[in-house]
Length: 382
Image (cartoon, rainbow, N blue to C red; front, side, top):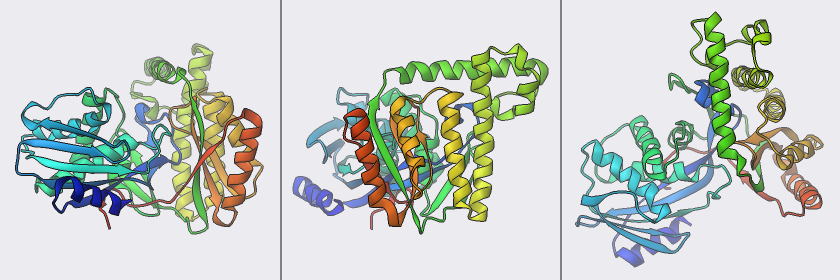
């Protein structure tokens, strides 16, 4: 695909581009912990967006979407959100450079890739980080990667209207081959953990379910967590988010909680503990224990946080039947999307067939599956 995108660029713009790649991401464990100032454990994967880019000695930004076969053109003096949805992710990044007084000159762009849209693999973050990386290199701005991540996140907030946390852009930019990144969502400190993935692959099973519940339920969960924090803070002034809470604190004051709020808080505190324990598993190279924590994470999301759905639960139950699977759980906001599964390499085909057959029989829908490897973050394309 890199060659096709490069050839398309040369055909459209008759010059030689630099070529950048930017990956999507998975989150191995640590779901709904980010907005509670907790821990997440994402990794960049080999579902990527590629960018062919070169200056054009004008004041115009010209872009071509390889996947959609669509072109846009904008004057760099009047950058603002447009009616073309996909262009807004690019325009938002340009706007961030302009706000920080880095002069983006006219440039041409062809981009495209194989990150599935709508599967929860952060295709938008891959686009934002890839362009930020590319422009920084093209015009020699010399910005560090963390600044580029912050710019990519602001682009999503301001031009796509999605108030995302920083995990997606962080994982896309800072990914490291065969490593997961433990990110502290309060301090933004991060640590790499080696994933012993020689014998395993990540398999994503896409339910293709998109429940309209997702955004309203997300807001409700945030409010429920804040309600729990306010109650705990009366007894423990040091508790500023559920990151600061313990299961003992919750148990001691359980009678004061609305039962639903209590369950939500128990899940978040437990999930933060699981991320810490999962990192200890990785340090020991104990992938079996790591997989069990993924199953425990799903149980918490299903029963305590209540953001799963029948399709996700069914896929996790099916995964448990296979001795080739170390762990599985729903990934992302919930009410649809993918399960993430750790599967032995020598059983990949059998696992995929088992899951596809079972899902079709149960729901009458053809399951989409993606096999992923852990790769480096945004960089020049090889």
